[in-house]
Image 1 (cartoon, rainbow, N blue to C red):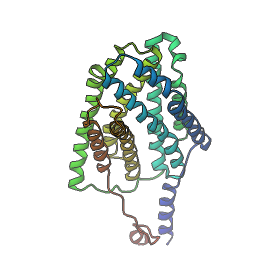
Image 2: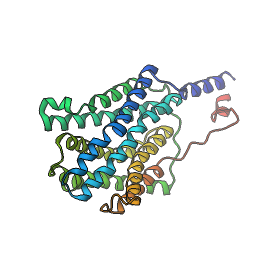
Image 3: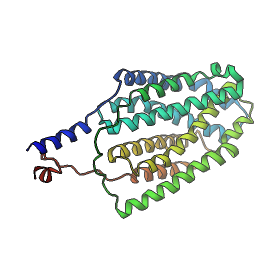
Image 4: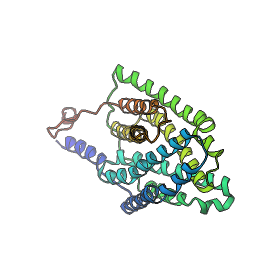
Length: 304
């Protein structure tokens, strides 16, 4: 009886929600919300007006405008996911907060690098967005709980079909990330942007946005590979989250095509992005089965 009680106590403590510094979590929510508001309602009009007034190719202007709106949805995902994490188990909260921190940190780095190349040291002031993303990254990282004590719960096994989907997801997401980074950066929309007469500050902001999108695409295969050995709950949440970020771009592309404001964009974009998101979600482990009668799965052996 005592052994069974100890087993149940250990399992309960391993799944208790924990945030190392609640104030850091709520501060990250506040700063992320301010960042999303600025990106969506303050920066959008002047940046996109300058983009559309430039002489870049039509598909480049339409594509970068579409991406801006998709990135606005991604910016809003940060405060939403941070709020949802406040009552999740520590085993899930820790890697999810780490993902939010790394995404925002990479955005800050892209803004800093682009501003320095475009303006030198004064670029730190010409593209001030990096400060907000850096603050979210630091606060989210500070809010991470400690690693849960004890051994992780047994991971649910993937069937043969899920294993096939897993390797297809890794191969397809890696190809998409490489294609987006290499061809997209050097031979597509951002290259046309750099060659255009678009005003410098909006041009740099849009280019930093593109560089972050490359990081976002590489996040997908890296998360799938990480989820191979991660706890089931944590792996599922992060795979669903990165799939949602990709879906935001797919929806933005679909809407702009449906409204007829981006006639030069190819219709294959939403299909490939939707396939990438679907494969990412399907590559997750199945949910672990838990008993609902209040007894631990190891109860009989523990009682013995």
